Length: 135
Image (cartoon, rainbow, N blue to C red; front, top):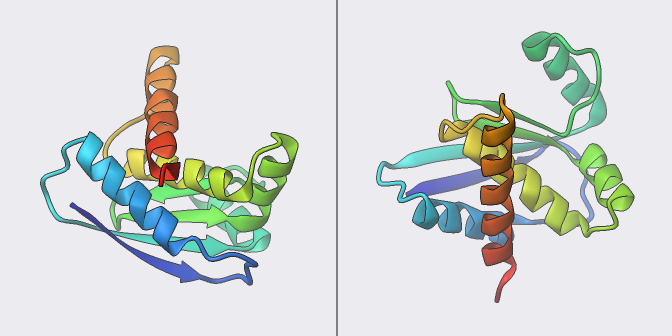
């Protein structure tokens, strides 16, 4: 079972705690996660995300989500998520949910370094998000 703690390092107009916890539960059920897994989710600003991306991935740019498996932490840049939601004409809730599920799948060992793995991971994310948005 996945338990989630959320830390908001930036001002956000919306709080997604209940929705993100539902994504954790749906993911646990769908993937039959048996072990206890404490996951930390942190929402950060652009400067912090750019710095983390440069340090850990060698890319000097803002990214949307980073996962750190050694500490079970997911970092999401809220402003980047908001931009992506606007450009893809989706809700910020859906975009944050999609990014969180992406990070969570990485923590569970999923990768997308080949075309087939990418398709599988995106398919899982979409299914998890769809089930989490119901009710």
